[in-house]
Image 1: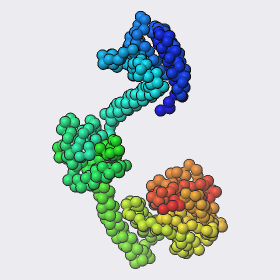
Image 2: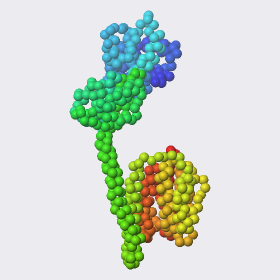
Image 3: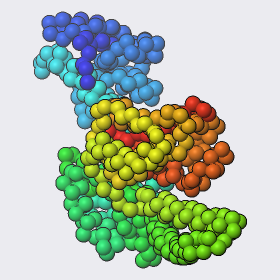
Image 4: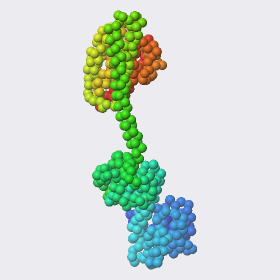
Length: 498
């Protein structure tokens, strides 16, 4: 704390000779001070009431006319004027010392000229002010600490998070109601003094003991997951954070905060079971549906090849429709199975040159491109991306096939390009085909959504849904910019970092 450079002293002394001696003693010393003198205690009280901050110290003689020096000190104490007080007295006694302490006096000096009391003034007065200020600062710090602890306790008690304090011997010393509810206890008395392993599941005890040892070594645990044993023996799941508690430079224990995630764990387990059931169901459906379709395709082909010349035009048309619908059903089942698998199978991510994916797709589509007369324009400098190469192949293949399907009758073109956007790569497939009305730009990514004007074009309505899911699983997004009759540009992004 910064000490005042100048002592502002209020001297209450009725003896003129003593006042003169007081002034001379301070003038001879190195103490910088401003001295205000009063003869009577009542006068000093008026000054202090009017402006208590004008003074840093009150020096008062015990023997005053009317109100004594001790009476003045008691009055100042009652009125809670926070000023250090020094009592001057002609005689010293144990009884006076006790009375002075009760009156709030910080120090008292016996006016004995033989002991050189005047020489003590430049030493005692500054020290009295310093001690008083230290005491006030300490009191304020203690009050602030009590208020802080009270606020902390209110927060802890009102929190939905569980809280407990464990001493350095590993025993519970404090906890809040939320912690008790999480562990099935009715009152703190049931756990206070018990070792923390009381609430640890058997499988979690060794890890919990290692965590506690780290805390005693001063290492906090920002986050963790605990398997807890409740009072009734059932298991609960919690996330927690823990911090060592240090007092006087020594770790005296640890504070822990808990969030109950038992319901979340239960929901996750149920979801895993549902996903496994769905996975099995999708395989069963795929097999059970594809088997009769294969028979339909086989027998209809047999009829066309073996008896086609014996059927009239209507019969051949019916067989062709049967074959077309069987083929569509097979494609639909394959797409549904592909859609259900995306995100469930762990993908292999690696650095893949995008140009390699583009060349592979175009190579496999070369016959179709030649048949339709579509010109493909490739931009230069494709990047290497961190991805599942097979999945990105599916994305690009689907977008190029769609561009071929919805091409113009004359001079169809497809442009494949890339833009570096810093944190992500932005790829595009642009065509000059029939285009898409703006009102369909979002819905085309929905499952089974097909545009009315494209009903006669082969497709299941799942291709863009599969593409969107793949891109999303890579941390990117996909969208289209187009207008009816003006071609379409499909953009998708892939993060540039691993």
